[in-house]
Image (cartoon, rainbow, N blue to C red; front, top):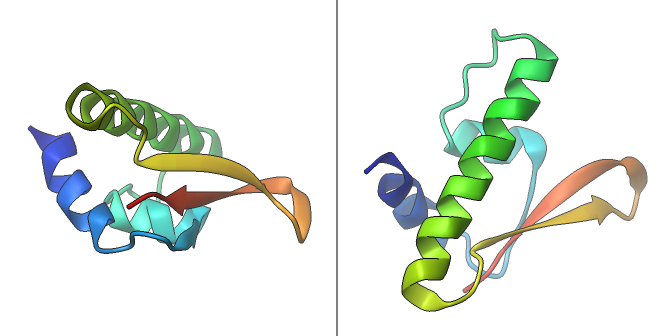
Amino acid sequence: ATENKFIHKLKEYSHQTLSSEQLDELLEINFSMHEESIRYRRSQLVNLINENYKSKYHKELINRVRDPNDGRKFIYRIHP
């Protein structure tokens, strides 16, 4: 379903790290939503994508990591 479309897109970013904003754009999250809603939607999609990916490849595609430059934020590492 939808997460498969995103898996395909995300695989193009293998070995790369994305900011929340870059990930939101890739996941087609509506930027006009409230900040809380954006974070919730991102979290939902990351979990869905990882569940889907894990069932096929036995590992997660997206890894959420604290931003070393700003500990309040997260960055997203995309696995091969």
